Length: 429
Image 1 (cartoon, one colour):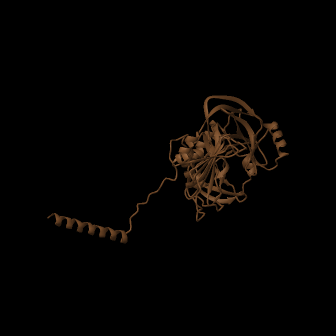
Image 2 (image 1 turned 120 degrees about the vertical axis):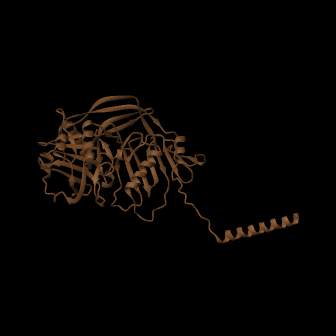
Image 3 (image 1 turned 90 degrees about the vertical axis):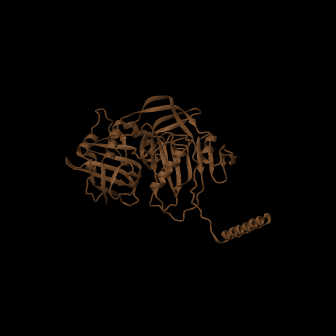
């Protein structure tokens, strides 16, 4: 009996072995697709941000009629009132044309008619602006960036809306919008002690008297090396550390790299991405991916605005975005491109290939605030005259904060910033 059981068991094992051999030779395994996380999700270091909150104009130019103008900046009551109204109104139908074809006397529009210019320093695509403004219907598929939205009362019954682009003389006339003459009247209503501005040949506006602004001095905190290693590497234990002669620290796991310039409080992260087989990309999707990545890798150490987006007319396999940091009403500008002031991130098909930013976070506790004045009128004209003798090619002049970083504190000093034609910045001294 036992021998029969042994023989049966042996027969079954041989049969199963033959079956297994057949399955291995003539069948294929079924794979369930698994999408690995490209990035490491870790404890959040900074605040979270939403793209919609980063799409705001750097200034609003008010045309009051009778050759009078003024400018309001973010975080002021007048600015918030106007920008909120603009976002509530809808714009529909965008007819591409030229400034000359509109048959408008722009000197009269600027000087005699009431209106407002919504200005985006470097321009934004319409399909990105659609996230914060009510742009209805089909949007133009062109690659132009919108730099200004000029809303003005043509007469007592008609309001016109014109969108200016980064292409010379190319504009879009809005076919239908629900702005009213009452809106324009409200935009052009200012306090009796408002600051008058004048337009310059370069199409930027300067105050005709000094303007009151605030200077700030505060402490700051810094990301630690351990925090950043946990943020950027899957397994921080296998990272190697290299020290350059200039004091720069480099951490790498063999693929990703993290460069720390401790004296400049600056970091650069890189993750090589294979070249794309084509140059097709979706700017809006890449922009959303950039915001999501920053939310998970350092967060936002303050208020930021989308300042520079890649020109879509250029056939690039990757896209670089720049987010400019603001404090109070003005951008933080550092000509040395270090310490603080911006976040730059480059993506290719939604994957981040490089990411650079400050590792400092301003700490407003025990902050010291001081009221100061920025030059205006003849004093500002003289500063620009002296600057022009050395630098003749500049694009615009605007109020900004110049950061002065000490070992334990940071000071934000108001100053007039000059944007040069090559995209760099200097200050009027």
